[in-house]
Image 1: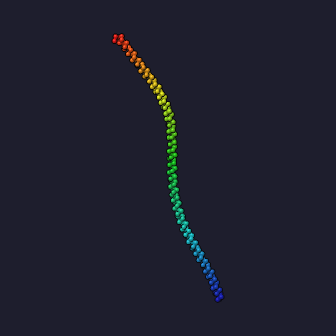
Image 2: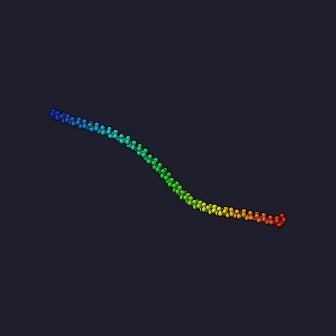
Length: 159
């Protein structure tokens, strides 16, 4: 029985040695797992921080997008207003060009009439000057005839 007990004791010691080795291995694995866990936890905290910053940037980006879309709508409305204003201005310009053509034609006609009138006035003034000169000549003749008649009457009456 002693041999059985010694044999069992030796088996138990061998078993205990194996179990101690397994325990050391398990401890090492646990330590490695703890280290990996700590590394993963640090990395997770880092990634969560990066995620939080990325979400903040995304929110800021979304706000900017909304602002830019509103600004784009305002610019689009301004552009439409400018296009309408431009169209109206083009219509007014066309109308003004037509008025300028009409007024230019009327101006040419008025200038032609004015030139014709000036020539007519010049001709008439020349005619008036000639007739005045003729009148002065006739008045001098009349005066000379009147004086001659008076002289003749005076001679007849015995003056």
